[in-house]
Picture 1 (tube, rainbow, N blue to C red):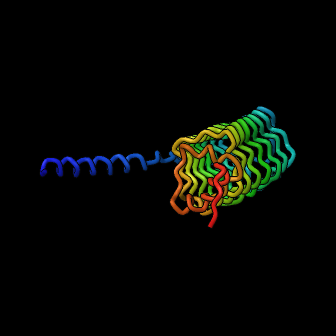
Picture 2: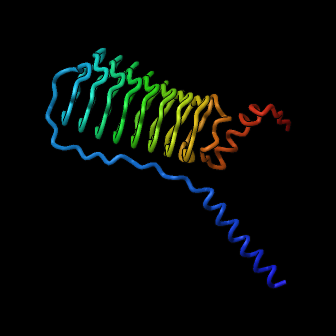
Picture 3: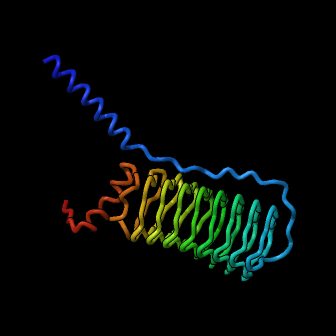
Length: 238
């Protein structure tokens, strides 16, 4: 009997250890942006332009065209980006602070080691884009289009995402911390090590069946329970 008890206890410890390991989520690697001394830039965007070590301060870039442009070690501060054409642009080791705009086109863009702080954006097109080691902190982004995008090591922190579209996107090591995720479209999304526990509001409009690979909290599960039941065709009667 003593032997069986020891085995049972050991099995319990092993099971607990397995549960603990199963609950681990690989953390996102945050960008470490250290900007050099920047030169003020007073010009506009250019197609395939090469912007290196420049500071765009209060620039009105609305409606300007800069497809394929490269921004390396740059700071964009208080810039207006309404309908700016930046498809396939590359932002590397750069910081965007308090940028604002509606209909900014960043389709197919590359963002690597980038911080976006207190942005106010609406209808931003990032479909087919690649985001790697990106921090989005503060601000509010409405109708963000991330369809078919690839996100790796991305953190959304203290921000509001209203009706973001992640359709067909691939998210790996993505964290939502102290933020609002409202009416999100997860249709066809692929998730791996996606941590949703820090989302103060988690509202999934489409794609509940694609949450495999994400981690949510018990209160979030209870909140989503009616939607899960409806998705499965289960009637809940008090």
